[in-house]
Length: 446
Image 1 (cartoon, helix red, strand yellow):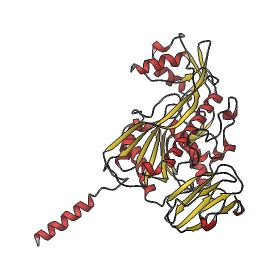
Image 2 (cartoon, rainbow, N blue to C red):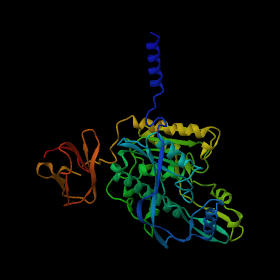
Image 3 (tube, rainbow, N blue to C red):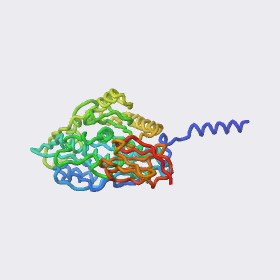
Image 4 (cartoon, rainbow, N blue to C red):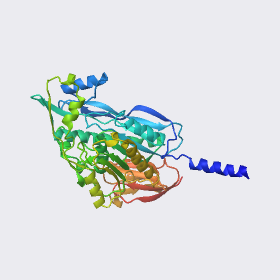
């Protein structure tokens, strides 16, 4: 009898302490660094004298690299990279993926940043079973120096933000295009952004039309469309966002959509304002603090920084409530920017983010960003026995084929007159969705 009781107790203990994917650390983590996700991307070339000194000192381990450029006419082409963190020995397919975006006022920071906990988030989430990516995006703002004053214009700042928006979209398309090789579910790609990274995360979710591109990005030299660089075809929006002290450039871009959002913000934030205002009002102090005396190559330097108006978490929350869009918030009284540096808020913020992401994994996958559905039924022509389909009208129109469990088995883009062959799919029943058309169910047989 005692043996039976002990066995039952042992089973209960083992069950109560069983670890769960996405909730607990259960894996060691492997890291593949500097994976190229976009090539030949146009970027600013000529650093100004202040930045040259700062970058040189940073390479020597003295201070922080800050990227400020002389102009936007001298350009170069660069490759953009991400570091991929994966659970070691994990055989699971269709895993959720998390893209982590660092902060740094769009002029500093890096994908291997530790101060802003980029590496910590990537490692912690990969250990829980996610595939995570720390993404490099283009940094640098045009800044002129006149009469010993360094000046940044709001238009130039807006253009820098837009370049980052393009880069994040390219990174997500890369992950979706390589979903099978990476073992990730293309309908479960989430963003976690810090400060500038949070702004890019929210813009990724809501800025999804060419008509919404900020005017500054259209001035010369033109920066191109939202998907100017990188792999084309797959959808470029994340399926959910956790934004730590973020904002958007225009609340009108927030449309009703079923994509979960977590907003974390300190109500006393003076860097990215909790309500509405121009961000980085304290950037002069920030630059002065990170600029060693050796960098003042032109003597005493004053700062004149103009930034565009942004709408912080309070405003975003209000709009989401008004539109009756489900979301989560964690707003803290009297806390400044990046308040996880205060008391035990680093633990509290991480728990909010981890719980938010875990909750997403317990819900049916949201395919809205991938299986963008059908123009008019007349635009689609099915081939004999559903072995192919042809588009009658449109250019670079996204399509996706899913099985009856909602898993994407084929996707891409198609233009008028092009035919997509479906004979590489196994026999069975599928759902075909083409942007602008109603989804249709098709059967394939050999």
